[in-house]
Image (tube, rainbow, N blue to C red; front, side):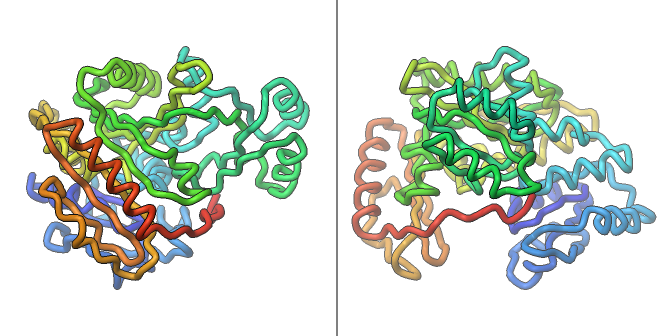
Length: 398
């Protein structure tokens, strides 16, 4: 396996792949050479790409891997981060390896491609338009009520998203983008409750899925500050069932065969219906993977490695039986460099974030109401005693 990682992540994947007998090679950013904590004991070798803010030159990468390929016949290329999906697709296409190619990867990276394919497949999406033809944009803002959001097509999370309240705001934002206008999508801002479904896929079928509910919408936290929270949904709830079914329909339409996905949906306040927001072909970030493992005993990174190995060997795969706990995650920027979390001492705490200028906790319990109570208490305490705010990042790459 050749694993690509622009950022320091995917450790559990690397460890499990090696445990299963793979030769594991890692290509990562030179800028994190001295700070990343990749499990070297699980790597047959590690290589570094020169980068500018984690951005690699695609042609240089292709030439570098071609050089390695002379003596190492890679069977799989794995993108460990959202920003590595295009890189992996280029390598698969060039060396004719299994997995998502250039076109298929678009559905998991390009917000315009996602929306177009979902709408064509009968899945509800907020009204949207490409930012390419001025006549189409004019018709859109004249017919779709404000506010709107202008989103970079190839960014992850809430990076670079701008909310526009007035028609002139839209045009001012678009004109400010210059030649990068077509790398964006414009859609109606739909207020509502945001959910995510994290799933495992094998041979085109959904092998496992878990649904969770965000607290304050991530876009609001990113742009307005506050405390980020998410929690596993109550088993047996109707909306949980609807989310998992919608996720299955969506990813079948996107032709995901073997891999994992993190997909987000919104239940609109206006009509109570679920709408698709965006998806990805990777393990969730923002410590959601740790939350899922706490509540279900399923490590999404390790399961991803297991299914990739099974696929390569033509073997079967089944996820482990999930645990029956509930869990919640709370994370915030902190005013102090290393906040003291000793005051949070409930026995349900199973994880604490160890990161400068941040505070984060995960709690788990078989009691859904207990998790609800702790999440409410912790959110209020962290907002009052620890929370800090930093402006959202601007777009750093296209």
